Image (tube, rainbow, N blue to C red; front, top):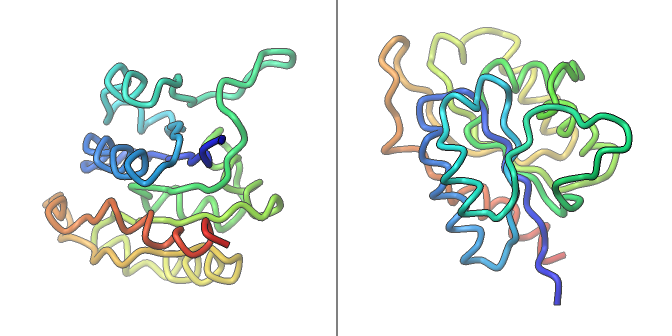
Length: 175
């Protein structure tokens, strides 16, 4: 029997290097996993380790016409960590990277999507952020509970619950 396929969209954030934790948890929960990284997100992850762990190449750029699709279609998507930039572009429909393009299309395809924001409190104070979260909620996106960290401090990795993405998706995946 074919396992459901989870896309993990990874953005450029300090905790991104730990995305293997989400991949492991998803695989243990019987998901097959592929990673899509924002172009800047690629610099925050160990691509070789992730490709070994998933068995799939990391996607970051659009394919040219006629190129084979390196990943099967997604049954669900987890965006973790999701940056201020990606959240706002996604909510506004600005499809300027493969990762955001996939997220924008997911709504039209009805693909269950969970997002785990990771940003600082100064970014979270910007009016666009809360407006974007509200727009994503209206679109049916499931939003995690991360509390923003202090500006210029990074951190919060100890509070970043990778498995929350799977918890949010569980009811959608079962139904």
